[in-house]
Image (cartoon, rainbow, N blue to C red; front, side, top):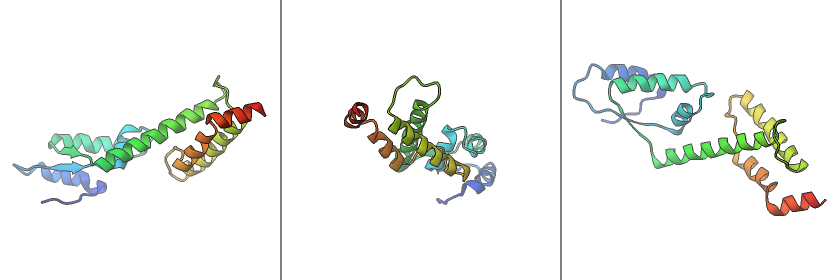
Length: 147
């Protein structure tokens, strides 16, 4: 019989399985678990690994859905883009970008840091990334450089 076990109850679920012979246990992992596993600054990172280590003792099989994989890849894309754009305006960066692009990145970074203070992940939103990418389109770079 299948049942949904919230993350907060997963440790008790695993302990209960240890006493049952001949069982099959599998778990679908959601995107938040995958992100927490792969991204060490997530506050749940260590907790997730503790639970998964415990789960390995009772041979639980883990699965993800196509949607979960897609959402995970999307998070990784946004994370890499955010880090790359912030690195462009770092004091040690030798990459030359327009003043408008630098100002837009600085503005998006300030907005993101305010969200991080409220508990969000340190990544730009899709809207921010689309807005920032416009600063790097060839037509915009030529127009800004010529003026």
